[in-house]
Structures are given as structure tokens and as C-alpha cells.
Amino acid sequence: MSWLIPERRRWIILALIFAAMVLNYVDRQIVSVLKPVLKAEFALDDRGYAMLLNAFVFCYAATYAGAGWLVDRLGAGRVMFAGVLAWSGASLLCGFAQTFGQLVACRGLLGVSEPTTFPSQLRTVTVWFPPALRATANSICAAGSTVGAVVAPPLVAWLALSFNWRAAFIVPAIVGLILAFAWRALYRDPPPGTAVPAGAAAPTPVTAFTWPQLWRTRSLWGILLSRFVSDPVWYFCLFWLPGYLQESSGLTLAQVGMIGWIPFLVADLGGIGSSWGSDRLVRRGFAPLRARKLTLAGAALLGPLCALTPHLPHVAATLAIFSVVGAVCLTWLFNLGVVVAESFPAANVGSVWGIAGACGAVGAMCFNAFVGEAMATVGPTTIFAALAVLHPLAAVILTLTVRVERPAAAPAA
Image (cartoon, rainbow, N blue to C red; front, side, top):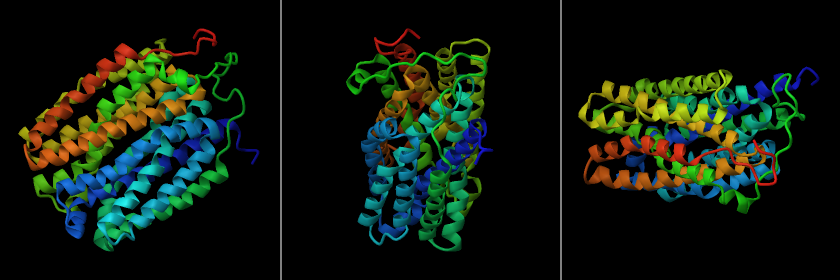
């Protein structure tokens, strides 16, 4: 296909990643939309529901770092194909689960395979796009995750109400299997110099960190702690908010399908807009890493709005608050990946993002257990107060720890 010059292929690849992200998030969010249905089907309370969530999150955390390592060694093309194939198959199996144990096992398999997508996406953006387009490209493909979160409530509700809850797992899974083979047919590694800005000289090759060297960098620990602290807020939006709207505000499944997507759409727009603003700062002459840090710190200032949720119990207020909180979350997720790309050699970004994603999932798993217990004991006020401080704390950690990291043998950046 000679018409597929690199400048065109990069955008086709980006579109495929976007579609994969949509399905990835639809598959993971099905249980949150169906929370009351699944609780009734399998006789669960909130602690049991938290256990179902943590089956996914534990496996997700356990394999995320390994997924990043595989991307750096086998390439994004092969790892993404295997990952989409596996997690679509896992979601398909969820639709045939007959017992709670089977559903837990299938969600665990989903957790094992889904982490392949994100380090593959970041590695692809790093090698296919120059720095002045990198945050925008990263935000576009990563925006698929929240488009998935936008699509999930109406799609899952419609499938469950039109057919049954099993169809909500099976239909997206089949689409994912088709997408895996489309990726296999169209993805290619970029030719040398593809990510170099027009008119610029080819950069001097930068030596990658070895695995032991990577763990001795200050920036790796700063990024790990930042994600451990900030990721639980986004996981709460995904896994607890749809059920919270049904159980605290009395909304039906159909009503959640009608309005539950609103915070995720606003979050998507906020994440893309902040990434565009971050790239604009770079074009105006700001150092790339400084531009990303300023963007993240500014967004973190809005995180404490979350504490207002139980004091403004009307459903419209909850949707408004979580629209802002969701935008904060996606500003962080979209731009923190670019922080990794700006801070580490390209050959290390998959590993770093994989380890960071695992750390974020561990933070979410701990917070899920806390939420499941708190819902049954002290109530939601404590939960929202805890959520409110997480992004500001992550901003402090990021500001103080993360810098450009290069191996000692490499030329100075």
C-alpha cells in the first residue's frame, strides 16, 4: 500500500488505538453499569462487589509492569495484537459465566490482558509522533478510554434491557476480536526519523537504561507515587459512580444509561483540551517537561471539589462535580504519559508506563477495599473527603521528584 506514507499511516494507527481504547473501557466498565443487576444475580453486597472489582484490579496490577517490559522488547505491534485478542476473549467468557466464581475468574483474565494496551499506545505515540504533536496524539488515542466510558452506560443499559445482561459482555467482545485482526493487518513499525520534527537534524541516539538502572532513577519513583495516589480517583469514577447514582439517587438502569455518560464526556473534553494547551506551551517555548508539570498542577487544584458531593446530594450536582473531577483525572492520565515520554529514553517508556500503571492499579485496589468497607460502615462522606486530597498530593510529589533522566553514558539532554 504505497499510498500509506508514514504521515498517513501514523493517523490510521492512532485511529485503531482509539478504537481499542473505547472497547477496553467498555469491557472494564460493564460491571459498574450492571452493579445492581449483578448483585441481585449473584447475591452480592458491596463487599462482594468490591471483591469482583479487585479480581480485575489485582490481576491488572500484577501484569502491568510485565506488559510494559514486553512492549519494550517485542514491540507495540505484536503486544497490542495479543492483548486485544486476549481481553476480548476474556470479556466474551464473562457473558457465559454461570457462578460468581466463574465471573471473578473471567474478570481476572480480563485484568491480566488489558494492561498490554497502554504501554503499547505510549510506545507507539513516542516513536510515531514528534514532541510538538505528542501530547495531542497521546490525548486523542487515550481519549478512546473515556469515549468508552461515555458509550458504556447507554450501550450496556440498552443491551441488558433489550436482551439480557450477558449480551452486554458478548457484543463488545466480538467487536474487539474484529479490531485485533484489523490492527494485525495495518500496524507497522515506523521508518527511522519519523518522530523527528520537519527540518530538524536527527537526534543523537540515546542509550536506554537497563532494568536495574531504571529502578535507581528518582523520576521513576516520583511517577510511581504520583499514579499510586491519583489513579484511585479515576477508578472510583469508573467502578463506583454508576452504581452510586443508582443506589443513592434512586436512578434506574435506563436512567443511568441516559445521563451516566455526562461526566465522562466532559472528562474527555477536559483531558484533550488540557493536552492541547500543554502542547501549545511547548510551541511557545516552554521546556516540554515543564509544560506538562504546569498543566498537571493547575488541574490538581480542582480536585478538592470532590468533597462537596455528599453535601449536594441532588443528582445534577453529583454529575456536575464529577464532570470536573473526571476532567482532572484525564488531564493527569493523558499528560502523565507524556511526562514519561519526556523524562525517559524512548526504549524505556513502555517499561516505565507499565510499572506506573501497575502502581496506580495497586492504589486503586487498596481504595476499592476501603470504599467497600466504608459504604457499609461510615458512609460516603469519608470516601469523598479522601478522594478530594489525592490529586493535590500527587502534584506535590510530581513537582518535587520528576526530571529528565538519561543514562550516564548518554549525551546530556
